Image (cartoon, rainbow, N blue to C red):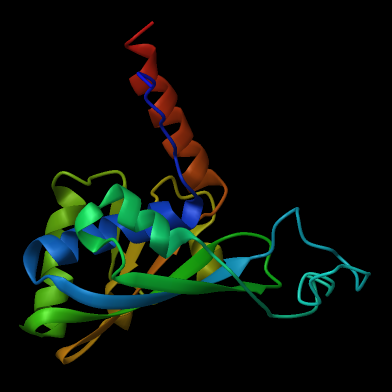
Amino acid sequence: ADSNIISNASCTTNCLAPIAKAINDTVGIEQGSMTTIHAYTNDQNLSDVYHPDLYRARSATQSMIPTKTGAAKAVGLVLPELAGKLDGMSVRVPTINVSLVDFTFITKRDTTVAEINEIMKAASVGSMKDILQYNELPLVSIDFNHNPASSIFDSTQTKADGKLVKVMAWYDNEWGFSNRMLDQVKALGKYL
């Protein structure tokens, strides 16, 4: 009962959480939905085989596969003010590394592309430096391979119409997450 449990959640949670925090702390989030376009992982089949879940039975190297993610709900555990406000899904795609979060949300007040991008730029050089990066270039997934940040906000993809906003962020689902695990070990090492 006196135990403290810590978790590094998931690579997708680590990508979504910095964005959700920066936005919620400034213009607020009423409700949101995310989709992660996720590189296939080692728990997927490389060829079509039997599996009780017919989606999971399909070849990861040949298909885009809709599946579940707990990332949006996990953000609600890290940021309790967003608990119950976010939901999401995943589409596994036949790329070997680097994934993308597509996050659509309703803000508490009207906003603009310029304001959203400025919020994210400020967060990337402030308290979330090294966790969140800000991108202004026309880059694709392979360009973010081996990037240590958890979330690389892509300012070229921001859309806003009043309170309805869509943003995208890249993440190296292996290396970025590994860097957060290292951060966690370093932080815990202070208590040894």
